[in-house]
Length: 338
Image (cartoon, rainbow, N blue to C red; front, top):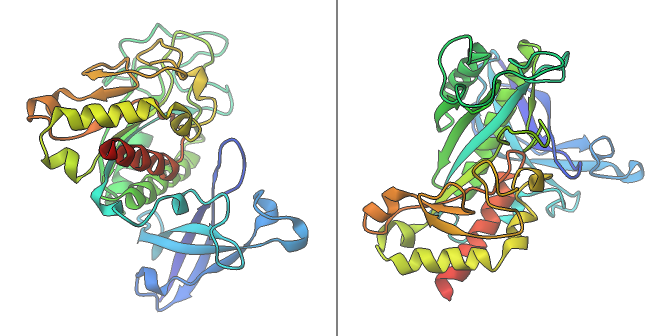
């Protein structure tokens, strides 16, 4: 029996990296990560190497079944240099191994479905706009919910692959949707989010649609943008029960606006304007149940005796969850050490 292993990685394009993949066929494959060899690819075609020295290495780091292909597997890879060091485009390598499992992450991944023929989302008439936002959020019915069949198929594939996708919902604009991923590890949360993104891109191909990850694809209009809200906690936050802990963490984030905004997604300033449930990209605020703040303290955290999580609402839909997690871990540790 031969198996199809889809090696998936992030290219070197800036300011936003894209997914790439290619298929390896293996005989008598047992389905384990240890059986996945490193693989060379042409980095000159992905903005990751010059033509005169183009070899880059794919290092498998996560594997799951590919439910959409017979005898298939999805293999998430880090990009390495020929000498074995992490390539500069390798965001996963920015997460340190210490305390990685102590940090839990839940990503709320928003996105727009996009019709290449009209260059608009489904539900947008050519040359015009649908009725204003309001009836589309968590909507039901063909008048307000678009391409549900695609979204449901994507959810089924993620669950069959074993990804910890915890939910989906329609968002505030026609053709805008969200899925949520949770994992008890920064690296694993990034692995599963990128695989879920890959499955979404590939599923959309069958429907003649693409995925628009831009945080404000409709420009300066009265439509919300797309984010990837970052819910996070570590053991101290989950177990200690002290308001001062959350205050110190939030204050540390406020002292490091550039650290976070530099990895929170390209063109995010177009989304973070202070309107549409956002704080400005160059300002910082936090508050209980405040969706217009940079960091929202969920009401449940307060009600549970100041135990639980925080939600950084600034992260853009096109951000790399690996790099975001690394920044969050660093600022959280600095806040706790203060």
